[in-house]
Length: 494
Image (cartoon, rainbow, N blue to C red):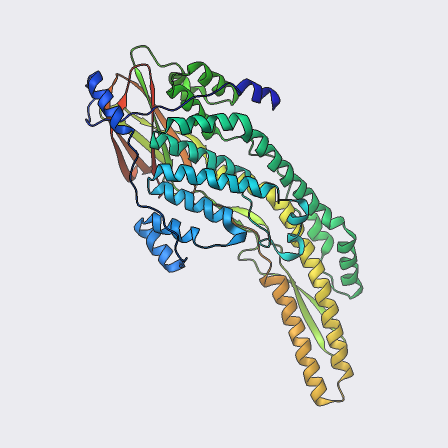
């Protein structure tokens, strides 16, 4: 880590992007200069205003593409346990509005909020979910969400033509980000270890023994032994951010640092070879395409019937107890877009290369979290069922003792019924996995690069499902200068 930080400490660059006013590749230096100056003006977009959250109104606005309204409602929620999640989603919705300057600043603010929560993210607070429930603690954000927040900051700078912002992002990345992500990873691992150790705790053993002595067989040893396998992979870096970072240096004609950065972070050479060394007499145009929205996690217990166990209570009858083990899993889904074709106004056309599928990041995160969450769920089931069994046994005794008094017997029976109902609610209805995540991040990031004659171009992106075009978008007046790298960014959220 130290070696990597030292190697990159001197890396600093700004991104230079150009657009113009004519859809042709034939132009002169004066036209390019005029187009470049025009492109530096900041875009105007609908402002985001906080408002009261209403699910029906949110869904209606989202369907209409009124993302500023949606972002305002998320920011107006005021849900302290989900501030990070709601902020991440609001930031992406602002990005959808093409208000890139605001989006970039918002991602920075949210990342700062994420880092602030790390200091609060102690193992003790994490393990509070052992009895309180998976959603009982603040949402801190996953490792991959931090990488994505940085990627979207840089993408926002690309789109807004903010060279100084892009330069600052890269300096911070090689200077502080990697240390921060390592600290988060260490805390996540500590919480995961602590969760598994709960199943070896005296509290858990006593609860299991009390169930056994009461004659209630929940199959505790089987539940413990059925833990999901330990995660085999970590989300150690983002191929997409590393690709964008390389372009950031190259776009500033800092080709030495671009090559060094690409080598250090193992960026696919086929993606950046012509970007880090623009062919003589040519300019380089890199087109980045975001598509879809990120895949989601689900609850492993979703749709499954809780396991039932019976306990005979003397003088009362058979009482049924339930167990429901909840932990996160990745929910496979079909995305509307599976490829992107990029065509220039000079006739050149390419299928964009997939740089990163962010569903894979969710899968890795789920695998890292599942084992600990499973352990906490087993712990809750056993401890709560132990307490519930003691409660219904005591209520059953009260029923028997009051059998000679009709009124007392009826009241005791009511107490008994309430105890059983409470046990069922606590074990089944309240047992839910933590499936919180940012849901408006892109599903895929793809890229297509062109080495072309200097000039002004139109860039058409066809977002496709198989042979069918789902949506077509065109970026007009894109300027490419000789010996330089220009980067354009597009998004289709379908």
